[in-house]
Image 1 (tube, rainbow, N blue to C red):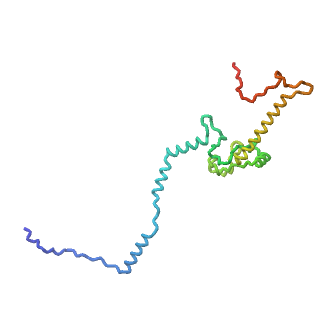
Image 2: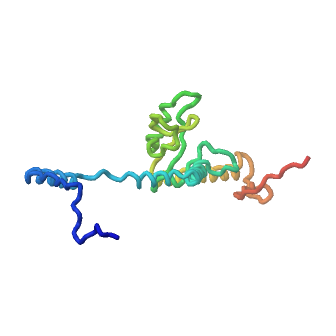
Image 3: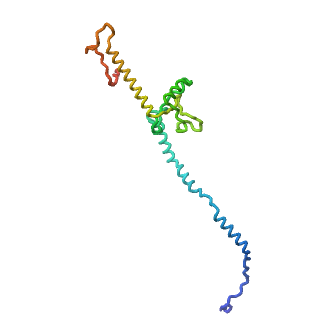
Length: 210
């Protein structure tokens, strides 16, 4: 029988001790401090850039990218490595690149350098193509085995090629005239049997068989 249980709650053995109330001034100071912390600039989250950098350093992707760079720098690998190969995609529009002599038996040729400058040739700065020179070096120009890579406007190069072609044609024409002329005291060489024949076609030379 629960004769000891009644409708009233039995008094508790423990008394509730109320927390001391802080003065209003201290409460205001704490609220101001919390608001200052909330308004303070938050540190940037560095986790996303780090994850992106880790994805960029994927070994397979890095190897594929490097292989493409090497193919463009080496040219035709089946024919060996050409030390003087320059990827045409690296040449700026409106300009032409050419390798020019810088050293002869280890010695510079100042007169030739002056001639190149007079014809408009200038050294290509190594800072434009850093992959064409050793890393961690203070190189100003791009050089290979005594040669230096130089540039000038392509329209000047085209004009120079036209002048060289015109001179070559004039030399061929002069030689043809010399072949048709006869020395003094001899008959002319207009006869079909003695008239020199000059051919401008190109034919393969016969290869003797053993």
